[in-house]
Length: 395
Image 1 (cartoon, rainbow, N blue to C red):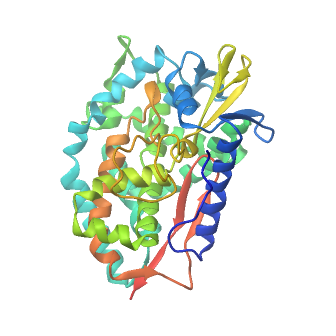
Image 2: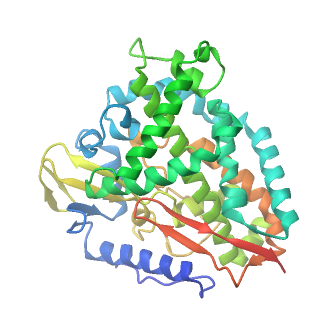
Image 3: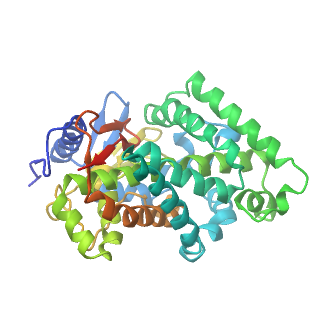
């Protein structure tokens, strides 16, 4: 029987209420069936774990390439199917292996310590603006070889594209003028950078793209720009939400915070539980490449499918007591990073940054509390879910 949603933890904030409403909606949809028509999206919504997993794994039936309106430099790995997807992904795959990413840990720790020390010195700070945002922005900028002076543009570009393009992907609507302008500005900057003499010889991600080969041929400028865009967006926006959501969860559930504080090895498990419990990515969008029956529902070729990762990761058919935040949950086969050919390339980096950030925050969190006068805020656009403001002060 489908679960009855119950809000655990400390109630009372607007963010708490919004989360409860969101996950109650997922629970109701799962109870109604694995797949149901969503009139507002003009798409089939997929809510249960088994069916969401199938959508993610079966790229031949559920196409990413047919799900996008983007063309030319706007298209990236998220908008492609194999074989071109596989060829392009291999260009950067070696840069994101767990072993390669692990070598970044000392630098990530140094950035983390610097940011946290500055935030704590203020006595009152916003975890998102002062810590969770600048950490992954700095890391991905350094990996791309982008000068520090250009990093303030990142947030503006990312915010406009997320608001006006990514969310519209679920509705099948074209990007807004603001998103088009932001992407044009971003592409122009990266195009100029790519054309600099000797740029392909630099030992960074952009250099790897410029010198890389897909199917034996150099990447086109459009493909390089699309990679830059994806790395910029996926390389920091979702990690910002992961760190902020993790901080919020540990404050909501002080018993779980105490467990992690006593056993620092649980930081790894805590990150995985945050990914399951309030993962930053809420859905993936596909289009049926051929007629298919999913969850007992016949889906016609060309119809849009929205697979709700967040709902699948709370499905009681897969998880015991799924609405309980449990840092000792094992196993934890959540779908926060997707599955199959589109499994998130940057997952090792996101996990490492979140683990380092949480480990650094544990001691301060025992001495801090959310500011009553400036309560936590939640940003949920249907595609991404994140605490967008979390002001802490000393107790």
